[in-house]
Image 1 (tube, rainbow, N blue to C red):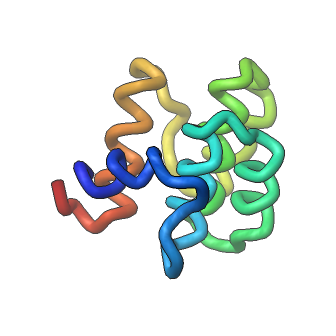
Image 2 (cartoon, rainbow, N blue to C red; image 1 turned 90 degrees about the vertical axis):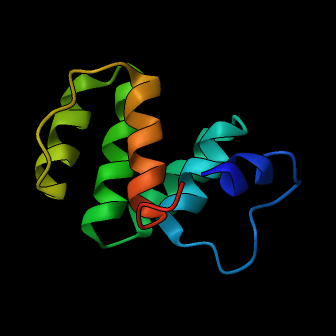
Length: 96
């Protein structure tokens, strides 16, 4: 987790970063178009989970619910920051 957070100071995500993490990286940098493009193009449950999160942050709860269902995840009810931390940790394979 610390490495991922440290990578946010860079100008681009690390080479080889998994697409869902790259989408979160771009979102954290404020480039929502790039984040959405990556998440939408990623045809995995993790990509759908990230896409749901992006819509949730933007307040587009209808689309967020759709993407949570596509990911097979319950609609999040906790703090957005808490969900971000949980997603990054999960996508990193539980490595803190």
